Structure formats: C-alpha cells, structure tokens
Image (cartoon, rainbow, N blue to C red):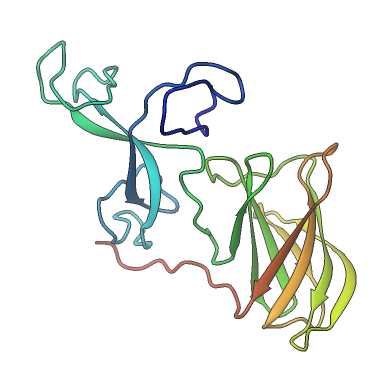
Length: 214
C-alpha cells in the first residue's frame, strides 16, 4: 500500500498497519528521462546520450514468455521452465538526483522540489511527485521571501514564482547574481501550511548535457 516504507525487519506498516512484504532493492544506473533504462555501471543513455544517474530500483525476476510471473529469487519459470530474467522497477524516493542542475529536496508530503539559478536574476522551481516525476500541483503557491548578497546582507522581498508553459515556475529578482542565497516559501496544497527553504548558489545552474549515445 505504501511502497515508500522500507524496513530491515519484518513488521507492520507505520502508516496503515498492514504486514510488510519482502522486497529486493538494487542500486543501479538509469537515464534521468528514460527511467526504463537500467545499467549496472555509469555511462550514457542509449536513446538520448544523457549521463546516467544512480538510483534505487526494486529487483524481481520474471519469465521472458509468461511475464505475469514476478518473484524475488532467480530460478526457472514454474510454467515453462525457462530461466527467469531480472526485472527492475522504479520505486518511490529511489531517485533524489537533481534534474536541472539545482538543489533537490524531499518535502513533508513525500513530493520533491528543485530550485535552480540558471542566469542572473532568474530562479526556477520544479515540483516532482514521490517517483521524482515532474508535475504541477493545482494548489501550489511559492515566493522568494529573502535574498542575501555576497557580503551577507539580507534583503526582504516578495517575488512570486509564476507557472510557465514549460511546467516549471519562475521568479525574477533584479540585480541578483552568483554567489546568491535565497529563502523561498512554498505552500504545496491550498490548505497546507507554508514551508521555508534556503538555497545557496555558488555558480549558475547548468542543465545536464546531452552527449553522444553509447
């Protein structure tokens, strides 16, 4: 019911009280965009050439013919006796890598956020679900509440993040460049409280490079 709950011992789920089930986890490499890609070592995505990132996926074993077979241990298919093959499945909170070269946080409702500073005066906010997939919560409001200059002088501001057609939220604070420190206030849902986040940018955020395929 709550796959984000993981424990080293048998017991009950602390959220719903159901009995915990066994799961096998594996630390693997995958593409930031094509999460079905699974590799055992670093490299580039065979589809778009992006650098692979390290994540945690669930590992089980399935039959190449009878794909409904899904077991924790390797062996043979109980129906056709073929050797089972590995199946890797994305998990909640298995990927906490920044997607756009910014600062990545897990937040109280199991969502995630990332803030970037791609250019002078420009800040961008990205929201992800518990599988680190981007989305735009309907009740979200966010603002930059304070900036701190290189000399450590704080300045209170009230600059809202505005949703763009590209899905992220953007705020512009004039005359702010690296090194930059900002305090952001984010309300993720309409009736939720406002949360405080601090971000430090020693350099401008850079999007992951798309390189040649391997």
